[in-house]
Image (cartoon, rainbow, N blue to C red; front, side):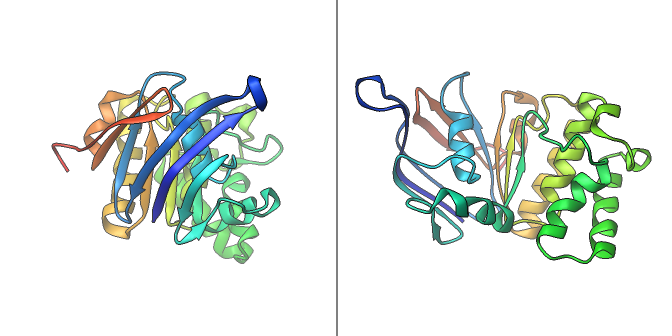
Length: 228
């Protein structure tokens, strides 16, 4: 589902260029949960953002579901993201003028779902993350943990084939974080989704089929988890 070869990402040009990813090779198959770990500044979020069609690569090859991203016009990336990616951002990225329900509904409506079907799906997802009584709340009326759960529900809307999560449990208590990871693992193992999680939370390492470590923009370790 994800194939990365010799991936490079640099910012700036000439003598001032700063390379943050160096010839990264990575494959993630359907039905797999991969934990991407490493120190702050190691390149984890940059790699995840390229996989999520948020950033463009500087070199190499990135294929998502058989589609090559290298050379794709930046204007085309949002449609790729809408079609293939559910992205859980660390900072929520909810639209402040929309309710929790409408934040989750929006991607479904953009995919062409009917209003009724999108509402039913979004309500079910928000209930599954414990927000049954927060459907009409604006993001400003939610706690940080509640906003993160809305972001998780939005990423799962429509069951996209690839789910990318940047520190999805950072703002959650242990019980809620466990539930979120159980949901992501079930989607992978039972539904065939590909799940990549950037995390510092060693409490959720047990959910990974593989743990990949990145340091200074390079993959330094790629191992199957003992519980996989």
